[in-house]
Length: 476
Ligand code: SF4
Ligand code: SF4
Image (cartoon, rainbow, N blue to C red):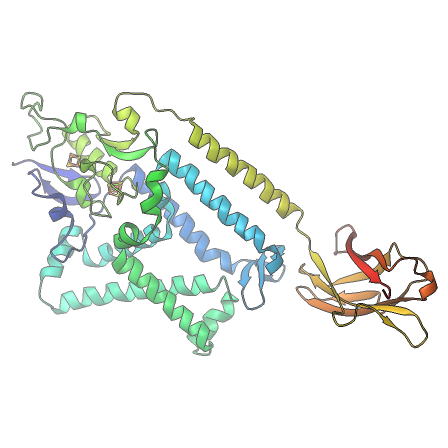
């Protein structure tokens, strides 16, 4: 019991001694998990991906496009602007498709690689990672944090706790403002909030999301993943024997036990696991992967990095814990292509193709024809039959446009009464009342089908024509 092992990332010496209980080691008496820092290939990937996603999240609402905020989901105006595309409530089907595509992408990736979404991309994990980073920079390593929490309040302890909560709250507030900046112009939001001139509801939501971020990433952490997030519960439905999950090679690791680096484990009847408990100490959900696959595991790979560090120090082969499949651990060969993967892949591909097609044919304009509901037709003082409509012209583009209106497939004797050229501002709806009238002797039928024709041209684009079917009613 005299040998010490150092893991690359952490300078705290680790005594090789049997673990009493995995949970004892991961949690304090208050059941709080003190996550130990670790470095390795998977943590580097996690950190870089976290930076990329965090950077995108923070920067995207600040991007400008043709003089306006490039991404603005304006709920009050019911318009979602994404660069040159504006989605209206009529286009919300596209958002529903997007959710379905995301769900199938998640099924596909989970069947193939387990819960990598949770470990590498989920905002809960990324934000928790950042909060732990603040904690470690201010309060020190896992061991120092545990010691600090056991100490009575002192000036040093107060200063460290105050600084930690200050940075947590500041980062939560920044997160909240950025998030709300996707729904309201972000420049004005920052200005209004910090000059106390923001409206009640805006201030309420900013404080609400600040509180949620602070609570989730500061305190809830793994509780969110293990008790609240529904994904953890239904993931097993997507797993099969060929899904890559973080697993401990029990055949190689057992019988576990401490030993000196110089001792041949075979002589002592031991496997490669030295029972140092590092894999438990670095686990953000506080589990012991040596107990087998557990629903709490978010596939983050921290235990792999920790164990590989130990294996390196001991001069053993790496990957006692690794991303592997149940079939491989049983001595078989992992099947990459299997019916479930192929099925999810095909559905995903079809959905993506349909979505791309719908996006490519997204109209920058829409028209609604509303007939006068009180009177299908009326007879004028001069005996002519008249039908009245309201044309709702929706300019879904980001430029002012002029629309030319007419009716087709009606005889020349039909008269259009109302404007035939209408200008509509970008993102605006114009209501155009019009009537069509004709002398009764030109009406061969009681119901005459015809089309409203709307021609329009966007700057720099080809002219387009839209037809909307309607009916002209005669007296019955
Ligand atoms: S699996 Fe690896 S990290 Fe975990 S206790 Fe065994 S040797 Fe240590
Ligand atoms: S068991 Fe390993 S992979 Fe799973 S959550 Fe814990 S550290 Fe991450």
